[in-house]
Amino acid sequence: MFLSLELPGGDKGVSIFVRDLKGEKDYERTRFEQSFDFDSDRVRANSAIRRANEALGQGNHKAFAMLFNQFDWPAITGWEYWSDNYQLMLKHALVVAKTLDLPLHIGADIMDAVLDAALDLGMQVDFSVAKPVEQPDSLEFEYTNRDLVAGKYFLLEVSVYPTDLPEVEAL
Image 1 (cartoon, one colour):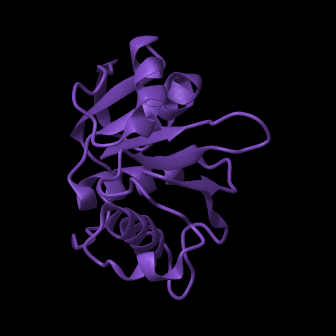
Image 2 (cartoon, rainbow, N blue to C red):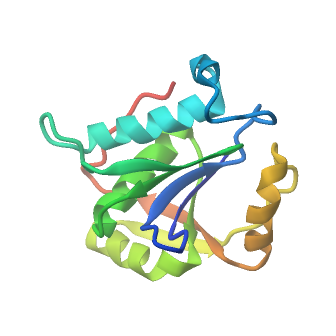
């Protein structure tokens, strides 16, 4: 799986994506019975995104009242934040990354804002240009690999996390 925080373009806001989901060759989002494969990459990714939103919330409120599963395609799930709070979006993405045990990639188009948010949160980070995935699990990943070759993603390397970052149990 490939985790990224990015600005997908068009009229969409900053979004968190999990790409290269295994076992989705014949995925159709309208097929209801697929949703019951609790061990699938899609279920684990969507669950981590939802549970991170709840863990970062306060009381009965989620961190993001509007976190919308906007991108539901074969081998891809993506959630759009209806927010401009980069600090909270970064914290959410970090919780998801830790929960799924994945590195966090940042789209080049929002890298400056993410670095500013990391500094505001007291984090210590470094980054490098992300490398293409040599053997992706899905054919759909070829488009992301093209963007990786073009240098459109960075790999965020975190040495000091925010002190108030909650833990979410992995599935």
